Image (tube, rainbow, N blue to C red):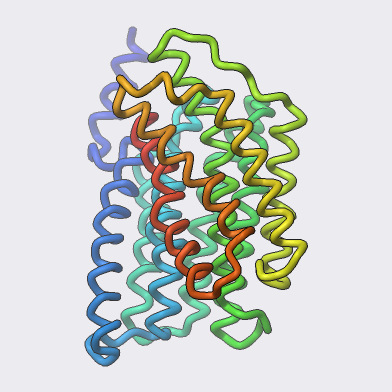
Length: 319
């Protein structure tokens, strides 16, 4: 009892905003997305409206992916890990420090500092999220969640490459980096969706959802890893990438069918998870089949808008 009282007293001394990982990142991440879209709309009509330390188009793409979206991912993982492991998540001053790294990285684009400073701040933020997650799952031997450690490492690499292109140190078309990053989010959504959606479907509907065969789960992950690599090196307008996109899309369709989402139409929140997830296989298949450059570019933007929706909706439901 004394231990419980002491823990409660310690908890009460922490500002509510920094008691759980998702609180600062969901709140400020959402607010930041509104700011980025508003600023980008202004810069699109008048490039001289605001002064940034990097090109406005690069900033818009980077901040929607690694600013806003990564904040939601980081907040979710630092909260969910305590449910996975039973170990309290990062909170208090440590959480404030990680949040400060994220915030300073966002602010750095508006002041006269070298771009490598932004890279360092972003990398430190992502490293802290990875450590916060990785330390707990390794110590408690939750091997099922080890996968998130290399997934976050790939995200950090893609982020570094985006800065490298901007600095002129990496000779890759920047769109290939952005597209690879979108595929990274699809990989993350696929992994998380495969856990969240069947779980909630069974719990809310009281039915038995057919489990996805292990070989299919591993094949889907492998397809995404290959897709990220191929897209980074040569883009998606080639036969190898299109073949991988089509195969991944069909595999996702098989997986989605097994979740029996059509039975959830009477539960709006649950049904919306299934509905948004449909955009993942649909988008992959369309990207494989559509040859028109304008339509192909539109699909990437639809990916950015709709594919991440189930990830964020699932995060909100779990947190």
